[in-house]
Amino acid sequence: MAERPAILFVCLGNICRSPLAEAAFRREAERIGLDVAVDSAGTGDWHVGEPPDRRAIAVARANGVDISGYRGRQVTAADFDRFDHVVALDLANLARLRALQPAGSRADLSLLLDHVPGREGEPVADPYYGADAGFDTTWADVTAGAQALARRLAGPE
Ligand code: 4NP
Image 1 (cartoon, rainbow, N blue to C red):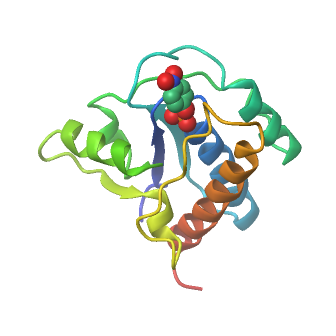
Image 2 (tube, rainbow, N blue to C red; image 1 turned 30 degrees about the vertical axis):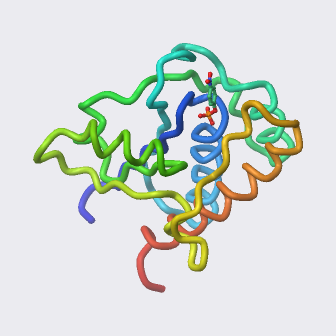
């Protein structure tokens, strides 16, 4: 690829799952020396301009990544041209993205866990209304997806 690939992770609120996917992917890309542009967004607009959920900030911090400076934003039509890969965290958001994608735009849409062999079709569950421990599961899921996607983008060994 001539230019570095650009990846956008998308969930509902952009304060729990997609900022964690962005963080896990940044860390993995750095680890394997992959030059990429990375961002995250939500299909909803309730948390635009807000930092991630404090539980998401805590689990990222526990895993060595500071996401406290991230700010929520909503997906825009321009994102489908700015990003090569728009990666949904669950099927409802993937369906929403398919409906929003302008005809002729270049982004490839996928579900995060479709990149993980054996986990195709699985959502990353929404931890927002659950217990704190749900965020450890979210971190494990987004890390698995981020590692598989980063490896795929890095190309064959
Ligand atoms: P996220 O979680 O989509 O993983 O950021 C949510 C955050 C907020 C809401 C729903 C899900 N909400 O309804 O405000």
